[in-house]
Image 1 (cartoon, rainbow, N blue to C red):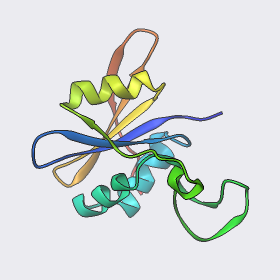
Image 2: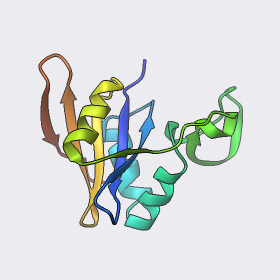
Image 3: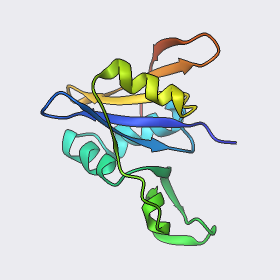
Length: 133
């Protein structure tokens, strides 16, 4: 079972750019990994530029082989074309996250990661804390 999420930054033109992440979207995993390894705008931008991700931080490949390095597992590594998405604002970004069955939406802002829990059953959104490292 997966806990889906989207990961986003705001671009210079005001649009939001995001990528989908299929596994481990909980703040206790993806949130902490974002804070630990993608803790600047440039690192977040580089992460998202790679497109949609199966797992944010892993050393297992799609065939369960051990990869030489630990890091994001992009769908593009198996030939899929899954570029980042563009959203006109945060409201649209969170809606698009819910539309892909996302449970959590991450956003890098003012030097830190913000996380929202999205509840599909009643369309509510709640900001949640990402645990400390």
